[in-house]
Image 1 (cartoon, rainbow, N blue to C red):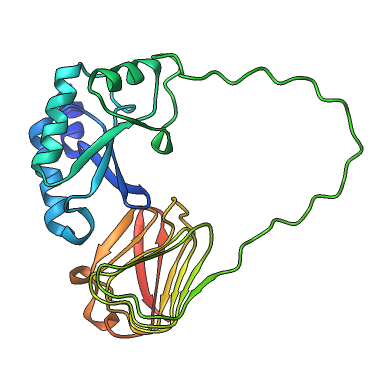
Image 2 (cartoon, rainbow, N blue to C red):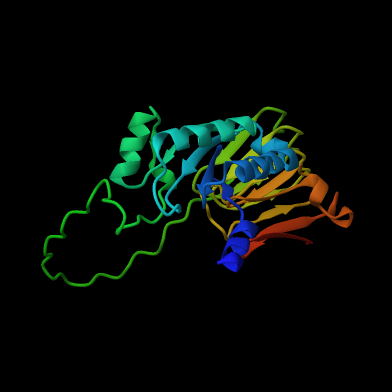
Length: 253
């Protein structure tokens, strides 16, 4: 029992990742508000460009049972106290829907995790499929891919460029405080100094390619690194970034 408790103490209380453009998902793994407060404060301090005052959706689906309303209110206060902005609950069971109504919070289906079929009733049961008469097989059409979105003007501080469902190609500088975001990969044929966020909808195969790497923050499918964490030999040179498992790696081109 003691070893199991020690193992649980080593595991983070919550997992904070960006699941879609501009909104983070906090997947809670156990109820420990003090430890959660310390973990979130460390996250915000280590990457304020990414997390300070970021909107957060709270995902309770990985807890053994759904917390009571007052306990969730306290969790929301803990999140606010760390400098984040809780905006709703992740879509889950009918009990989660009822809890969200009690707290006057919206549900975010974008962050729905695998339902706990044994612990709650899904909000919507899929209808039974009607029998389909056999038809002559037709050759499958090749998958349609969108061309990359090209942006040839400077992206200045406070501006954001987003390539939905495709790669983003930039041929001018990305200034400090600017954001370039893509559901696919990002190619920068200039100097990125702001935030570069490929794989914004969770595509782990997305990459960053740039000629003069000086980005203040890079994030792929929710995994991020800030400029201070980048080895000095990679700064200011041609670099690519990609995910390998849960690690965001960088290397010279």
